[in-house]
Amino acid sequence: MRIIKPSALAGLFGVSVLALSGCSSPSPAESSNPYSGKTVCIDQYATATAITDIMAGLETGLADAKANGLKVVIENPNADPATEQSIAQKFISSGCDVIGGVGTAAAQLQANASNGIPVVFLASSTPVEAGLVASMDAPGRHVTGVADVLDPAPDIDAMIKLDPSIKTIGLIWKTGDPAGDTLAKAAQKHMDSLGLKNITSTITTGADVTQAAQSLVGRVDAVMIPGDTTTISAAAGITAVTDAAKIPVFGGTTSAVDAGAVLASGYNYVDVGTEGAKLMLGILDGKDPATTPVVIPHVGGFDIATDKLSTFGLTLPDSLKDQLLKKK
Image 1: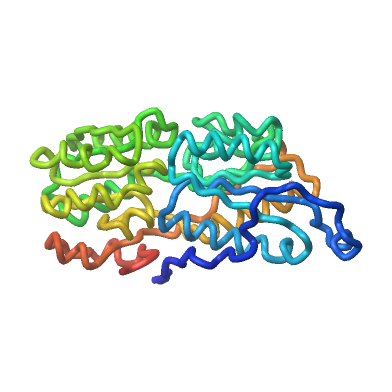
Image 2: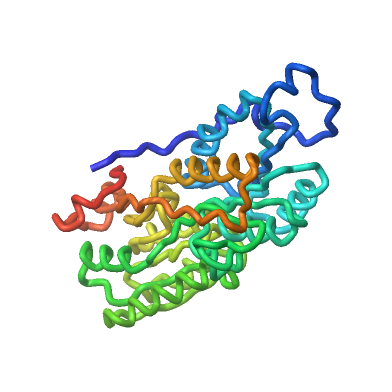
């Protein structure tokens, strides 16, 4: 069993979070640094535990390059579409050499707006379906990245192992989101194969999750979050409703578990950030993103909140004990 504690974002970047501004001619000392005059710009998209860990991995992976002159600029639009658009234009006009987008939605916006500037996505579950890349092995344009390919089937199977009485499952995801739509469809297909009923309640923004969860109360035995970034980052709003109604929530990676879900399969997202940093540095050193394969990290197992097991009167079966990534 491997126990991973979520890292704290506050203070991680310190002076490495720099305002974009006009640059003067480099000094001789700056010119001797291999990354002097180069800038990596990160669209963090939102605040959530998994994103915090991604940012920590980026900080570690870019540390040596920053010591050699690299500037790192980070913007967090808190999943607001209008702010996202402003950030995209800011990145384009301010001389970013590589742009990082956390999650599918941020990566899509940055890729479509970047005017050819290389983009590295961080934690897109469905990069091919989202049109970010042509294939995992040969991305084909100015975009590559790290894919946290999520399969909702193991979460559903684990849910039923924990509570065989579950027959009807509510699904909450952001409609129109390539990751959300694709993963929800996969979840529905697997539920159908198991003879389980599903009731959908989609959202358009994170602010919709409370209403979406409330619409499922009294109608479902459990709630499943298939995995889009918007819904995951607002998972606390879902669990606030479902906890009061005694409905367990599953899926949604580490962030959802930390926000009150019972169990979710997932990655060590620090590794996602570290792998993303490697791709960014490779591009700065001359690699072509079009021919740089997408990285898929190793899936760590399940995150589980043991306090939630007690809340819902569930017992962890032996078949799941050896698959734990993190135990709270």
